[in-house]
Length: 212
Image (tube, rainbow, N blue to C red; front, side):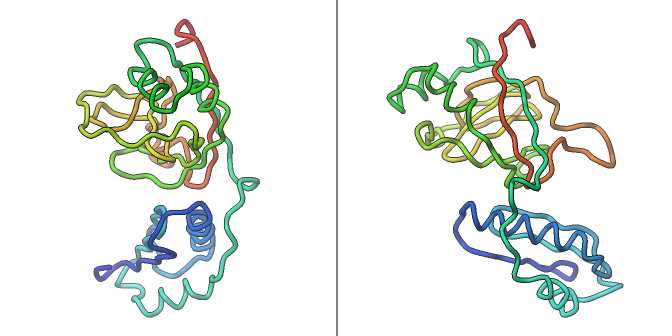
């Protein structure tokens, strides 16, 4: 990948086990003190190893990374857990009724399913602080909308397929918005700009409008 990076790809299709191996290799590379290493960028099925081409080269970086393989899938027991408050009430959940109808469930059942699940941060992408959370229960998984909606406020909690996400900035989205969180995922701290690390786990705690 250009003159300063190597891409490590585990698979061509997304799966929980594949992403856990990506996370495990990310941890291994980060702690291995590879010469010239500048950054490791984990995604759902692969990770990018960025290096300084004045200190090392592709051949050496590939050798260094291969020496860390194979890896065992990362365990949630080793991850940091975060609990985010969420409000599912009217005004914060414009797509909750549609999700409930699509799934043949009541709105309360959708809320119960979403708030009782445990999610894992699979990757960051698309926009600053957009942490893709795997683990949406199958009974409430819905596809993306056919057309995006503009000006979705920051803090919107939304789902699409098996993934959940809390927005950090005002943006358009085709995902289904089912709640709002007051949590600040972008911390503003230079040494730790985001609340989560890839591989961390997340759960949601239901609150009322008055608590926002």
